[in-house]
Image: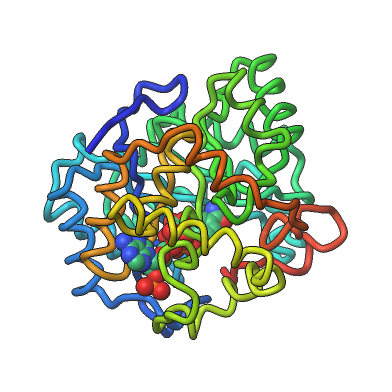
Length: 340
Ligand SMILES: NC(=O)c1ccc[n+]([C@@H]2O[C@H](COP(=O)([O-])OP(=O)(O)OC[C@H]3O[C@@H](n4cnc5c(N)ncnc54)[C@H](OP(=O)(O)O)[C@@H]3O)[C@@H](O)[C@H]2O)c1
């Protein structure tokens, strides 16, 4: 495993972050395909054995049970100071807004609940899961700074935002002497490269770490056309993100398969090796032990400039999908993508 500093922070992370959205009680949240605790623990343990020290969960994942499984496993199998734990909080609910709960109060409640779920007294990275159009940015940044000051988070990050949003938030943090966002978790992979317009150059300029999610397009970049899995069948949210562009994406998937054959490696290794040329640490989901092996191996694969260009050539711009398609004021209030 290879390691890197996370942006300007002093966190040292493995170049593969284990995505923990696939762990949790299947009856308790958005996904019906998640692993129970015993199977989740085995995947997490295998990650630790392969040197993965970076784990990404969220209060939204399966009603907090992902945080609970991850917390228990990491407490049992690792030393707290040797792992980097990231979790995320959601926007204020319409009920909280109605009741006059401030952004600062909301964040305090959320971090306390996440720490309880994890069984930890701090997280390494506390992530603003999606832009909250109905809470003043000042309240969010002040609330997050209070979390850092209280020692409940070492650093803060953001997910699902436009470059102008993180730029504006960090400018405010700098003016007020508050903690800035040190990382961005956006949707970025060989099939969806909209981050390259503004976010990637902005982060390179500012030393902000890119830790993209759905690095394998929820499995589409790991398997040949026609191959399927329980998750592929059940994950309606991923279908919603990728089905509309399946035909044009198929051209890129074919190139990933062809290059994998030429290089004698898996499609997972090709797809992640490409992303590793662009970002600090992709967040990769795993539902089987061998998935973790594939992700770890990718850190040793070097693609040539010609191979990279060949993989990239067929890309055509995509419409925003998933959470980012809802990053606008009209929809955000009433329709959270994630049930709380
Ligand atoms: N911030 C956000 O809004 C957000 C949104 C989505 C995800 N995330 C984070 O990103 C993580 C990853 O997202 P994701 O699960 O959607 O996407 P992903 O990493 O693109 O896809 C993971 C899937 O790829 C397949 N896979 C992984 N390794 C493989 C291997 N070596 N060989 C064959 N197949 C392999 C598995 O599919 P099968 O299970 O079908 O076999 C696995 O479930 C999540 O766990 C979460 O932490 C964040």
